[in-house]
Every structure is written in structure tokens, then in C-alpha cells.
Image 1: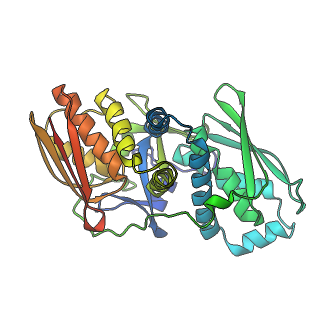
Image 2: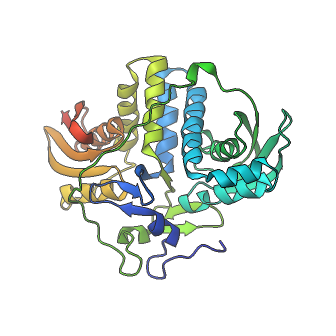
Image 3: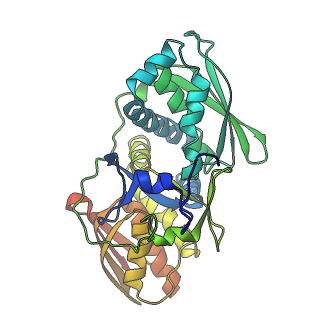
Length: 355
């Protein structure tokens, strides 16, 4: 992809290291806004979680997922888009289509798929629209929102959205003026991450200082893909606060069973072998796996045939991590189990799995 430099040693795009820091806390922190935390996760895991939650709950959750993701993306876009740029778009001095294209183009580096703005209209009436095509989105349920949120923030109007299949793994997304659901307004709760310095250290690339393990992944920038070179699994950078907000909205709508359903969904995926450990120093290996993904800092791990105890100093997505721990234990020992987990101060987490 033109204009995107990559490290000659590990192949990681310069944008990734310029904008993100693998912090000793075990989080991936945006350098220009330390409040913004990212995870680096298999996109199949994200989609699996949503599908399994629907199956466990027996109801569609798409409306809640899309609207929560849209509100979170809009809040972020509002914060990062300069007011001067918004004014130029709203005054007609800048065409909104190329501006949106430039913004969603960053998604190519983050693994979101290939976006192309097809058409737009901005006259300040109800006939305005934005039409975008995305090929191979990491998740159409989550990924349909970004261009709509950018359009909404730029023009200063509430937008609805729709998407339709337009070919193999290709969708067309349309944004149009539409009031947002009243029941969701003022309800978005985004976690604010506070984290100590931590003691997590990942070996760094000697050229660009990105974690050296990122060299195991291939960035196909023209396609918007990040793939593990050996397994072919697709990765994506995503804000865990968005997933946590989605879980919170689902709990408001559907009740207290949601955290347990998230644990169960992740347990199923992990037990089936989606994640595995090589069998050396399991504590150090798991610490590296979790911190590379930005899920937090593992401090203690006990593992035996009777159970597992995991303690983290910083952690995001607590029910996902609880399900991951339970699934790993069951995959290693081939037994059913029960799990208990509790959040500690400052985002800490303690998970106990018993056979």
C-alpha cells in the first residue's frame, strides 16, 4: 500500500510502532492518548464470541452490538478529528468522501479489511448519504460501523446504517440521516483504564522496537489483512473497551447471565484447541501470549490435574480471560471443570478453575 512504510527487519508497518506502545503493564497503549487501549486478537475469536453468545442466549444481539459499537466509534472519532477539519467539511470546502476514505484507510493497517468510498452526498438535508464497499471485513457486525461513525462525526448529524452483501466476502455499507434509538442515548459506559508501570518485557525488534514476535505476522496492506505466517489466522487491533461496553449493554438488556455466557463462549473456543501452549515454561509462555495481545500482565500461574490458578496485575476483558483459562485447563487435561473469577483493584484479575 502506497505511503505505508514497513520495517525492513520484521515487516511491521511504521504506523503500528509510531502510534502504539506495548506497555510494561501488559496493555497496548495508544501513544498520543494513553486512555485508549487496544488488543491484538484473532478476528475469528471476536466473531465466535458474538455467534456463541447468540446461541447461548437464544436471541439476536446484532442491534445492541452494532449500536454500541457505533456510539463508541463516534465518541472516539469526535475526540480525534480536529474541529477545523469538521468545519471545512460542513462548509463544503472539503468533499466528505475523500476525507472518510483517508480515515478508514487506517483500518487497512489494523487488519479491518479493504475499504473503498464509492459515493457520497452532503447537502445538509435528509437525502445525504455515504456509500462504502468493504472487502473481507474482520467482522461485518463490528466492522460496518467505522465509516459511518467517521461520516457522522464529520457532518455533525445522527446517522443510521445498513449493509448488504455485494459479492464474495464483500459488503456495501450505507449511512443516511436517521435519529438514534432513544433508549440508548446517554447510556454508553466506557471503561477508563488506569494501570501501574508493570514488569512485562517483550523482546523488541532491533530496528523498529516493535515486539519481535510481530514478525511472525504478515501485513497485506492492500487487502487490509494481518495473517499469522504459519497458521494463517487473521488478526485485528480492536478496542477492548468497546467489547466491555457491548457486554455491559447486553447485561442491561438481557440480565446478569451475560458474564457467564461470555465465559462459556470463550471456554468452548479454547477447549476446542483454538489456543494452545507449547509445553515449556507455561507461565512465561502464557505471559508472553497475553501481553503480545494486550490483554494484561500475568503475575502468577499454578496448573495441575486438579485445577488452575491465574492472577493478573492488569487485565481487560475479564470474562474472556476467565473462559480462556478454563478452556486451556480443560484442553490440557481433557476434563470438565468449574470456574470462579473476581476482579481486583486497578483492573486486577484472579481466576480459579477446579476439576
